[in-house]
Image 1: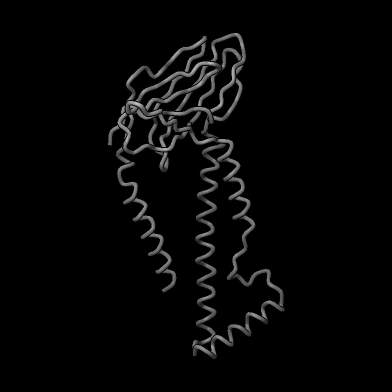
Image 2: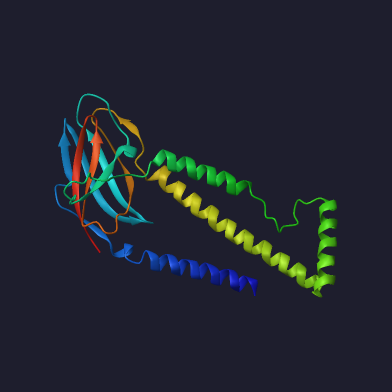
Amino acid sequence: MRKKSFILALFILASCTTQRFATLPKLTLSPLNKAVSLADNNEVKVDFTGLKSKNYEFEVSVKNNSKDTISIDPALFYYSVNPVKEGMTPKLIYSINPEKRIEQLEMQKDSLMSEKNPYSLNGKSVKQLVQEGLITGTISVLTGTKTKDLEAQRQQDEDDWNENHSYQLKMVMNELDFWNKSALLSCTIPPDSQVRGKVLFPVSVSAKEIQVEIPVQKKALNFTFAQSN
């Protein structure tokens, strides 16, 4: 019974999330200017590749055609929403900082991996097992519940905790995999070299047009996209 309740709770949570962000899967961005911009012998290309969770996902490539090494930092990439109302300062929405996000996820992973199932009997001392047996016996007497039913409930709680814990750890590991393998990270680019990777920005659902700014050295190249949903 508890197993069914647990699954039902997960289903309801997933349904609420789907309803809350129901418009996001239909949201898309179309480029309004050239996908490639040139500045000081550097070539930058920005492509909208879709949505990842509640974020715009872009693939950004930077090619260094100069004779000098250049550097890029995706944490400095941002976009502004167009048009800007008269008298108002454009709000700059920065990309998700990949290094900080990786650090946060590593901390979450370490925390999850150090957690122990509070319902499990594994690893408990004889003294702890005796104490829990006495508590279970007392609850059985006070509530009229059979001891075997209480043990079955404990086992179900242990299984549910393991299932939920495994799910959380899997989500963290999957996101870490994305940031470590697919994301564009802060780096230097030698002459005649190119880097490419994914960059995420928080979504502005009501925006009709956004202008993405990619700073390379001392210049910021802009890429404008129309949004529809």
